[in-house]
Length: 430
Image (cartoon, rainbow, N blue to C red; front, side):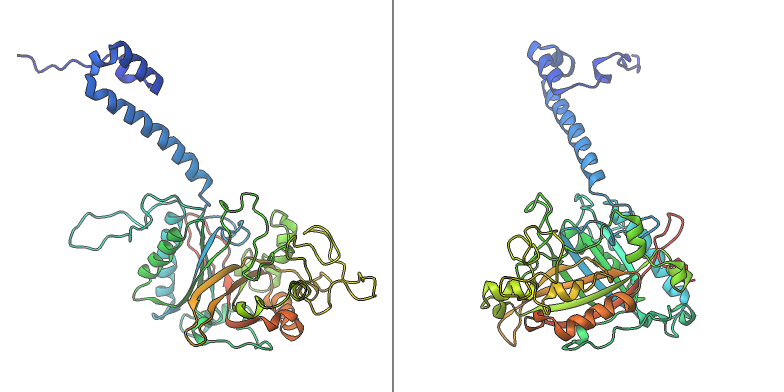
């Protein structure tokens, strides 16, 4: 008895790619059934469907994947995703080697998760915990970006980085009206995680915290959201929880010259290691929603200096029409009140920042019984004390909006330049 098994020739139907139409045509004539048997027809159809689904998923993943490596970190001029999960960490270990080890581990994990991959290969050992927490298995990358920055406290004597601190990089000064709460302030390291799926964003923060165990601990976290792309296919300017568009005046992120002027730190600005990075300001701003909801539409529009519906400056027609701070109505009054938010934020137009904010909802304030909701304000700029600080000092002093908001959290971080596949985030510090 021979052990030779008959092998299909190269031009056998088994070696050809069959479309669903081919399969059904052959099945209809009985040809395929004779070759494979009836049960295999279903298998071929399933394989064909999987091939098509695989191609579709692959194309979809390419659109939903934002590379982690690059000249600049992703998540700064990247078009804002639907959700944010911001995390501030405090180091518990000391010494530069511990910090470098953490940065290397976070870099590898962040790069993998940005590709929609788990943070490592599973060993299959039932006596060990899984390497990845698993809740994003099967999910797309969802345009995940993970952006790392160092807080001012990272430059104390614990890691030998004192000489690397940028001269003007300190905690923000106290602003008029601030009621900061320690649980929403500071941090040795800030990590901004954004994605079009909240579970993907949560998975990233959870695994970074898990990898940091024994080296760093979470100090505070805040979830946030915008309108989703599905709810707003035209990708208009997002609205904040007071109902007004927020971010209309942002500089063009596609203009490299403007980004170098507004967002990216230059080597001439101070320490060379920050060249290509950016300084991030984070403010947790509680909104007094219940009071706002009782104010008139006229009061609301005068407060912002814009029409609520169109987002146009008062006296103009369209959202992106020029802001004319000298325009007057028939009675000779300024169309845009001088103490409105847009008038103060715009000023003479010489100071710009890149806003990348998200709304948040923290449930109910148990002390007041009101909603704990507001804005997780985030901005990126080339120099905090030449851009954000003078702007916020002006707003804190005179902005009509202050009646309806309260700053309860504050932090700043020096976001590193990007890194390459052979490097790691923060390597420029060592």
